[in-house]
Image 1 (cartoon, one colour):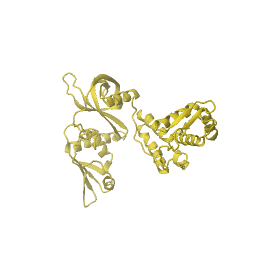
Image 2: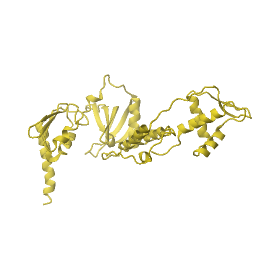
Image 3: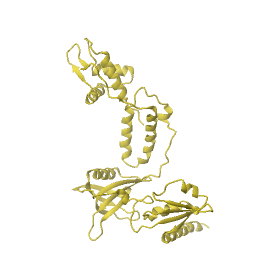
Image 4: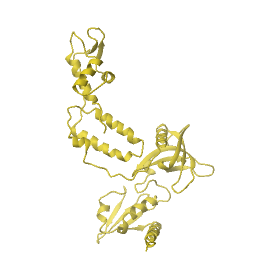
Amino acid sequence: MAKSKPLLRRIMWIDQQLRIKRGATAALPNCKTLARDYSDEFEPVSEKTIQRDISFLRELGVPIEFDRQPERNGYYYTEENVFLPAFHITESEVFFTCIADRALQQYKNTPLYDKLQSVFEKIQTLFPAKVTVDPAWMNNVRISFVESPLRENDVHVWETVSKALYRNQRLLIKHRKLQDSDLTVRTVDPYHLLGREGDWYLLCYDHPRDKSKGGIKMFAINRIEYAEKLQATFSMPDGFDISEYIGTMGVMREGKPYNLRVEFDAYCAPYIKERTWDGGQRIKENRDGTIIFSSPHETTHKDHVLEWVMSWGEHAKIVSPKSLADEAREKLKRALQQYEKER
């Protein structure tokens, strides 16, 4: 994270200066003298920054006034017993903030990254001067996150979609399917943004065009090449529940659901058993060490399911549905043909 001026340290220091000068008959601290003395003791700071700090204290309810008499010309507490609001942050909290900063990398392909980075920088300014942290924690946290390959998203599209989502504003989008060269123009009501493995999707109501069918659809944000907010607004459907549309094993539940059953060999079984792949998954263990993995939930996004099963190579075999097993077999045949061409 970028280094920032420690706001909390300045606040505590200003409080100390006002207490020292309390009851004095001579000059009181003002923005000019506070900025000068703080810069000499800690780091350069402007008079405007000190003024903002004073305003911040007033917003917190701290009783500060300015005495305009020429011989005093400065700030003072109007009450005898003044207590600043408590600020508590521990060393471990600083450490975990740094870990969270590392986790931000998964948002690099969206405008969220810069926004969240700014938030973390502001949080850093609140770290008290008395909190000491091993520099290795701050500058080289020994924790990393392996990121999925990120697709680039158009910043303007992302911001337009997110603002329309927040304001329940209808959108006009131009979307290109993965294997199509032509753009399709659609009018949609944005319901939900979903992040999955580095990709982002818009769940929305797609308004009917001519004789085509409307309904709930999912569009990949990186394939939306243009987005425009319209004047029309919409209301979310009563009882809308995102879980009804998003399945664990796939991006969106659509089409006819089926129960997936996959056999994993003894080598791969321990890896499958130690993770939750689907909220309702069931695992049957066989005597020979193999297992049968089943998902009773609606699993309709076959491309994602095929990708997952085939990623285990010779260690996994689809038992049902038969149609999915047949499709996996054909894909594997075509893959093998790519290598046979080189003989």
